[in-house]
Image (cartoon, rainbow, N blue to C red; front, top):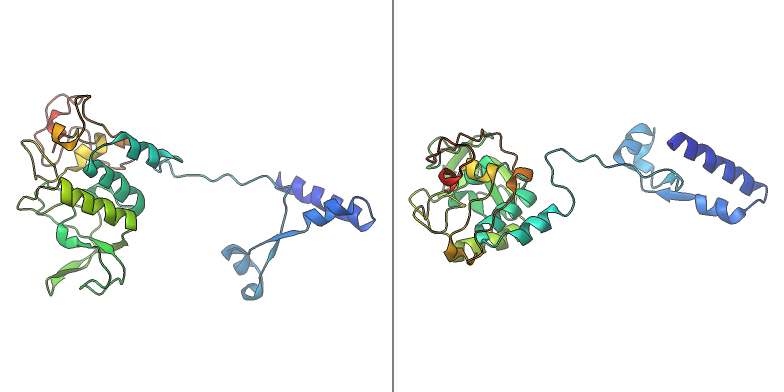
Length: 257
């Protein structure tokens, strides 16, 4: 199709030179900004400022990764949940690009959500993804970049920037629902018998844990987050790390932590 569009454009441009429909020929003389591939292909690519474009060519299809959310899915998910913890999970996975294991393995000391943090590795708000073997929920992120504890601050690990939306929803979760235990991990179970315990990857990979009535779900029942389309965890359904999983894989009572 691109070759046919190029031939058609050349035909109309040739007609325009001979005075046939000059307005169309002028409309076809459009340009675009050069891409990195254009700069590399050209002999003097560093001096390129524009490239010829063909408005007759078909639009290129954008191939999305099979694990990426479809367009508009984030807004649908945020509208379906009524718990600050679930909104935090959706926002952090979408903006931060973290795996579910990396998110569930975060501790409060890993979050440097202010300018000029003590670690000195990033001027803006950011998060350190650190691999730990002793997490209370037995979550061990796949990222194993070395990290250290220096001058009362985490340094090293995989550093990812935090967006303003991530910071806003984090403080909403902290100030309204967070009940820390001795592990100081986030996100955590906001209420119930397991209040304060950190969330597990199995709870996130299968679906979001139903929020207790104190989270504001009301008598209509807890809001469920269809996280199978969002959380790219490779944990098996029957392997709830740190949770008392029942034998029936369809029973989610053991995933409410």
